[in-house]
Amino acid sequence: MTRELSIPFNDSELSALWLPAEQASAMMILAHGSGAGKDHDFMTGYAQAVADLGISVLSFNFPYMDAGKKFPDKAPTAIAVWHQVRAWSEEHLVDGLPLVVAGKSFGGRMASMAVADGMPAQALIFLGYPLHAPKKEDKLRDEHLYPLTVPMLFLEGTKDPFATPEKMEAVAAKLNKSTELVWFEGGNHSFKVARSQRTVAQDGAWLAEATANFISKHTS
Image 1 (cartoon, rainbow, N blue to C red):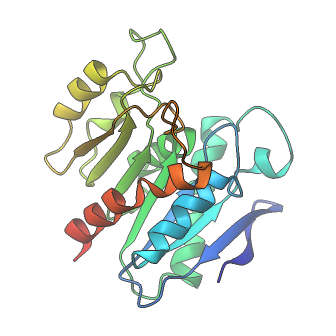
Image 2 (cartoon, rainbow, N blue to C red):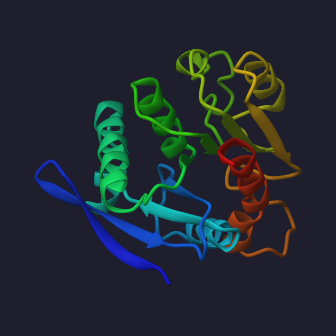
C-alpha cells in the first residue's frame, strides 16, 4: 500500500511516496525526470513493478515540481535534495536494508552527481540517462561518471535521442567493471515503442525485471 510522506528540506518539505515491498530485500530511492513528477504513470508503474519484485521504493519530487514550476532546479539544489532524502531515508525507512538510488533522466543524472559528491549508495540505476541533448552528441554529460566506483545500471531505449547507442556504448565501456548497459528495443526517452499497445505505466514496468536482477546481483 502506497503511503504519502513529507520530507523536510531547508524551510519547506518535499512530497514523497513510500511503497514498501513484502519481505523486502533492498530499498530504492527514486527521482523523476525533468518534465513529470513522482505521480506520473511511468514512475508509479515502474515503482509498483519494482516493489512487486521485493524492493521497497521511496519516490520523491524535487522542489520545482512541488512548486508547479516548468524548469528543473539547478544542479546544486537538486544534489542537496538527494543528500537530504538519502539521509532522511537512512534515519526513518532503511531498517538495515541495502540502499540503491535511481532516477529517470534528470533525476538519475542528479543522483549520480550526488554520489560523485559523496552520497552513499550500493548501486546507481539510470532510467534513460540523458547523455547529450538531441542532435548535440559532441557535448556529453559524462565526466563525473568515470571516477565512480558504485555499480551502475543504464537502462536505455534504442531510439532515445538523448543517448545514441554508439555514444552510450562508448561511455559505458570506460566506466567501472560493475557497470551494465541494458537496451530496450525501440524505446524512446520515455521507453515508448512506436505502435506499442502498452500503457505508460506498463512502459515503466518494462524496466523492473532488469532493475531487480541488477540489485540482487550487487546487494545479496
